[in-house]
Image (tube, rainbow, N blue to C red):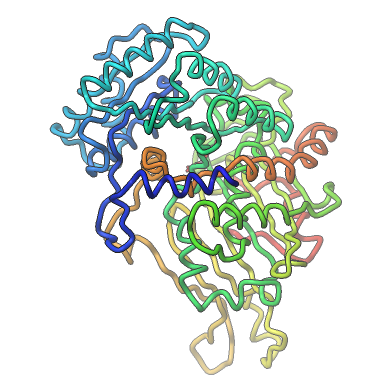
Length: 517
Ligand code: BG6
């Protein structure tokens, strides 16, 4: 926490362009370079390199920006540039502009080596020093670890040994790490100890890309810029909250990462618990990183699992089925997964938030692969009106009121309430009132990674979970993981459906049901 407070102050100081009085001033990064470890991986190709290009295209990177790839491949700088170009042409959000590309690509370098090779890190240090001299990157470097977690310690040690982790004077050195931050509380603590022995906490940026999404940041605007919602945002009015992250894709090609990890560690420990924190937290004193993190930490500290876990959680694994008119195989037939894999591809848990605002309101979190469709949403489902002065049959089609934050893909907010059906009868049926980003705004939303990479370069830590948040999230989840490990195989569900029977039973036991997005 102390680290975060210092970090917030440093962020403003480092970036004099961020003058609060003029919102038109763009946030442009100062002189710097980024080194990507794991540059041949999928994330780098699909997200990181395109995001860097998009930032350059939007004029948010300094003209002297440098990008260094580090990997085992025997590439020259030119080969690396070709790989980046093809990633950018395929995945960038903004159009390809030759002049932007040429200027950006002039700052590309490639360093060949393995993580345990001291000489390779010495070459990396030389390359960065040369870039500082040639391009004026000012000795400011962000090291992006897009590598498996077991490689974090060795890369950190090498950065330390080669003098890159703690630069002199007012130069900065930041490390960006991708999840998973460990696989349980104990391993997360170990990882944090290693990281903090090399990089001070204020130089560690833990990526949770959900926090970079526009619609996720809009939770703060919706809650704290309006008077309309706060009075009903509590246990007096809310019956329960459902947080859903459903994907229709399967896990073909991802066995190396996913087998043994599963849906709870992959997304509930991070994305879904962060969504819960933003939905349930109290208003922060300000949006300074320290104040925002303090509120998230408070609410995560008050969050507990509902018991017994045999009834309040559900774990499934997709079997073969039909999706989008195509026949698809089950997880056990996907390439690379063990034929007896017990990895869950569907996970649901029930949480309670023990605060005055939320006591008694269940928070249901679910996520799965190969579900009916891709959708992420947060739904506050309200209590029924205490009395309905209508003939009983007139409200047969009236459900509970709901406020739904549509995180993706159809970004927006829906309010569901009862309305009179036109005609002679006083019949009431659910209708939706929609706000949609697509029709309300002409600007496209930046990709989450654009926002987050820029924030790293600006030294702006608000959207990065701190150590305490990561550890609290594991503390919440660990008992579920232990319980599931002791229970053996997950329950199968056919691809293209909405999860295993136990997930429906989990809500039905209290007379509730999952929304059908
Ligand atoms: C990642 C998970 O963090 O998020 C993936 O590791 C998942 O399993 C992905 O597919 C989903 O991201 P998005 O932004 O497409 O919802």
